[in-house]
Length: 226
Image (tube, rainbow, N blue to C red; front, side, top):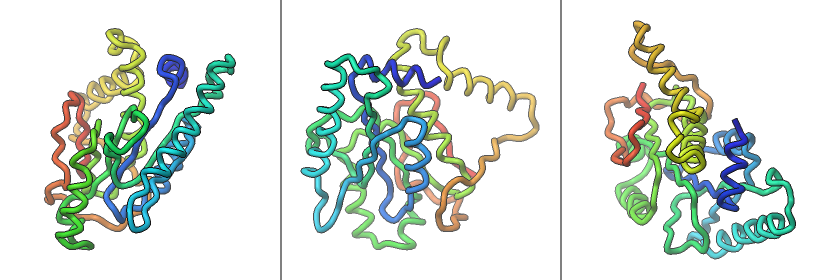
């Protein structure tokens, strides 16, 4: 299954995955679990008084330069490093590199405002305005194995890039999704029970509207509801 990732690296000479999230969420376990199968280099977007995009650009480009040297010296492709950058916001105009896929994890608006004021909320939304986000994951219930959803979305993106018009025939994610749909047709259960795989505060606010509207163009949008 991971050969498709190596094919992506060979074709594109890089893989940069950006993961942004609502401030205050503890996503360390998600980051660690997602990075392991891909052997990502982890780079955090530092924030003191200001968000430090200068350091981020420097750190990412060091890895990209190392990758280019390896590619030019015919180093085996599995030695080329993918990069996971994580932080609050990744506006393309402030980056000196190209993100391949950007995913965002957010709390519902009402839950966020339980712990923060309106000014922080509006500032958070403003930071996201200039981001190009492939998929939002809106957390309304902690009883979700979001790691698997993120992993599948990454593989989906890679497979679409590598397989092109043969995606539906060759895809692991597409065929897995169809299998789940088929199985559900023969089940009395209306939804799949997902296990909790991250640490967070208890969230029981199913009726709250999400902080981000899920209006992306993905045909197989995943609803993360309890």
